Image (tube, rainbow, N blue to C red; front, side, top):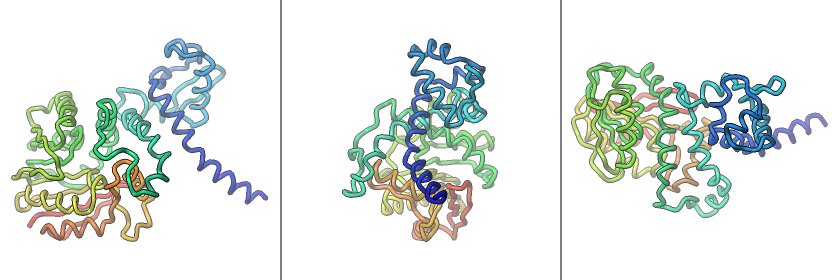
Amino acid sequence: MSGIRGLTNAIGNLSTRLVDSAVLFAANEANVFSLLDSPTDAETVAEQLGWPVRTTRMLLDGLVAIDLLVKSGSQYLNTELAATCLVPGRPHYQGHIIQHNANSASLWLRLGESLRTGKPVRETGEDRSPEELRAFILGMSDIGRVSAREMLDTVDISTRTNLLDVGGGPGTYALTFLDAVPGMRATIFDRPAVLEIAREEAEAAGMLERVSFHPGDLTMDSLGEGFDLVLVSNIIHSYSEQTNQNLISNCFEALVPGGMLIVKDFLTHNDRSGPAFSLLFALRMLIANGEGDTYSCEQVASWTDSAGFDAGRLVNLSPQTRLWIVRKP
């Protein structure tokens, strides 16, 4: 019987993970963690939020249950995890990407609809609101700060001087690379509304003079030319195989001979047996835009081979992220 109990508990826990996420989303939206860097009681938190004490206590207890707060008597305090990742202004703050995930949560509840129809839940062409767009783009910065540093530890770009960051979003990778390579300049290619945010980030980093901003649609517009390094980070999962093949060909044209292309994404094993994150992310693309998917290392290699690049190499950056690195002859 104990074996059956373990199985039923496992299924029960799996089916209620949404509860944990909902608790985190509510606390993040209310900026609760900024109030709990020192021991504080529910009454004080409720007063600062303008909430009833009863509901505030319920949320704080829920955060204890999912290990984001600790409780001693009537006092609540951020755990190390919350203090590091959930307090605005901290170097590793993740609040924007959490808000983006919260904005997408309702789509997941309609996954069955997308699976039956093959169409996204979000209407094709439906634009995000300015608030949703900002949460998404700055969320990319939240997660990109760590990945960009990991890339610098993995790939030698010290001799590169002219970077094109395709679909560069907030410019996190470009700005990190510029900080590491003083002689480098960067061009961020993205849609105009996104580039407004990238410009803010570049100005805040004191690098505005070293960055150019190229508005355009990467599915149809020229990327420019004369670059010795092109980065395509977390872009290909949003598009079809044909669109990605065209994009890789355009990257080839944008590079000078000897130039390097880095494709960073949630690449799957060739038999699509993992990584788990990558397999689940394909479903996220289904509900979000219908066109996207996650692709295997073999598929990406076929695109770069067809475009004319030299044979590439695969680098495992994290449990879910890989780099495919090629050079133009």
